[in-house]
Length: 270
Ligand code: SIN
Image (cartoon, rainbow, N blue to C red):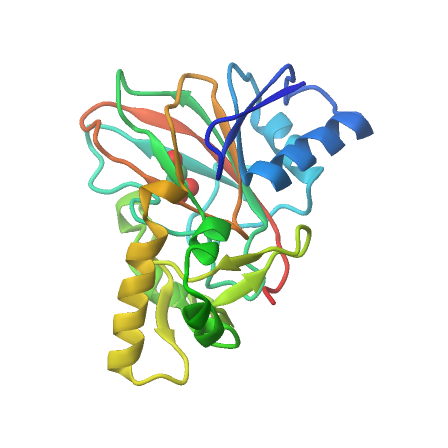
């Protein structure tokens, strides 16, 4: 297996492995190590059934079921990521890490695309370690110990109507998390607020919270913290939601971009 860093901050291309094949302990260790070192890792030319996709993901933890999007028949842990000429919106079209409204937000997400547009449809990934490190010491000290509210209600209510989801009677998760979290494996600190889910920094006035969040949301989107992935048919991206935010670019309408996403359960941020 070869691991080629794509930027000094974030992202690596991993080659010499087929994810559909059973992994031995040493291959698992190498993939896990690459993910911990680079935060998001990419693979080319992967052929995987949904069962193989889930089996690969299961080696990193239990699979999570999304609170708002039903999976394909028989695969509740899978999300169909799809956009075409009839789409009115797409998944992930702003900076976020996945489902941070959950009490225990997902550890990681694995996306496999089988259909890509002629050009465009890239995904941006931003390192929240780098975003944290770039803050001044006084700002780091101020944010340390603060918590923020993450709202599934704001993010998801009515969001999947275009997919035929009627969420009348559905209660979406809403939880508070530290603004600065510590990664449970690397022990590094990461900024943990995002534009899709974070609605309020607790303990501040509304004006203070709005202004601080606006600053932090701009801050996480700095190109210096990012890697940009150009998909090909059969590409896979595996990102660590504990230290990465991502943004799916919808610049290819009316072309089709399609694939499947599996999400791995995580633990309570601290
Ligand atoms: C998402 O999971 O947020 C979508 C990512 C993508 O389609 O690139």
